[in-house]
Image (cartoon, rainbow, N blue to C red; front, top):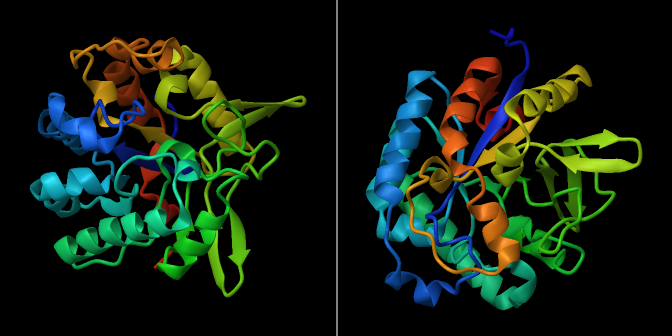
Length: 276
């Protein structure tokens, strides 16, 4: 077993299997809801290793399943926000985004009695076209964000953005950005720390990538979706650019995730950043 010497951030984008497929939330009622089953499975896995995480809660899920939010908090995990409707931010107006964020944060705070200080955008969709969202996060009292992915693909990313935690100042507001971890090899920046990337790379390679971040003196941030632990969730027709990653190697996730929790030390993002 690897020696656990560096505390890293474990983050969960808490959404059901159909909510990250670019399907409008107004159409979600037609899909099988599996979040209770897979949420319990995830909490059991975390409990077995006494690991705590940050749960970026989708507002839609929280409103439909408030008991899940309460259970997650009762087990010692951090509750943060993932917005309300899992819509790409750059496809929203600032007015719609602000209202959705107020709705999502207000519900979580009313339910738990705790201030929500962390945020991750759906699809990491704070890009050069939606930097205005940072101003709204500041207005709403967010203390840290984890939305700016320092790679570039068809949905997200800002190439050349800082790879490790850094401060963002937007007028009177200041907060910390904690990007999902990447590895710099020459001039290439590789995404390495979660989601489909964790299912695509062999586990031994992911482990070496993440150890390299720690050797550089930095905590890494890892992310997972609950549905990645549910290889039996429904398969529907999707554009190939989505289905190729969404369904890839789901059967390996649970085994790899359990290894990850044994091989590395984790804590909620708020704790890693020492935000009170």
